[in-house]
Length: 110
Length: 113
Image (tube, rainbow over all chains, first blue to last red; front, side, top):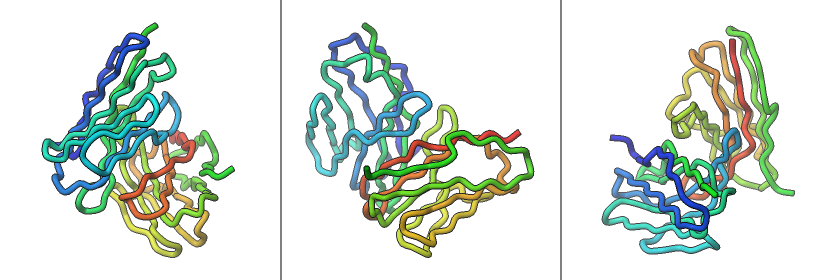
């Protein structure tokens, strides 16, 4: 079992709709959670981080954390073609190591 | 402008040659990291350093070496012992350890033939 799992996609989303990305993790003691956006051929860019259960909103992005169920999700509202990218979930586990998922590719269609 | 720079952007080498990738940051971050990314895979940690003159092996350190003589700089050497060196190499930094958010440089794409 991988430590951090994401659906590889592609997740096809109509422009203006909500994109919903999920990430599950295996280490129940994990403390901090990050979402990165990576455009093709570029480096990852941090877009959200969350430490506590519940929702955290930043502009069109909302991160949701449920430690009891061991998942973290990212919602992208009013999706734009510029949101087309691969989204990486990263989890800081109980050993203090940051583990990355393989990423979910999002394609926003006009 | 604060940020992380990596050079060169593209690097081509012949098998059997050592190559050094540069990473510099002016964010005043204590911790620095090197990752490798292969197609369809997540980032894998090669080495990390929490303070000057100290560094730790990550998950895939074999065939790589690093130094941390200055807070701003964390160069990575890919040695001839690395069996599969062609990859996208990413340097990152954070204000503290791995529990803090990491910021990435633009990356170096290394091709070894």
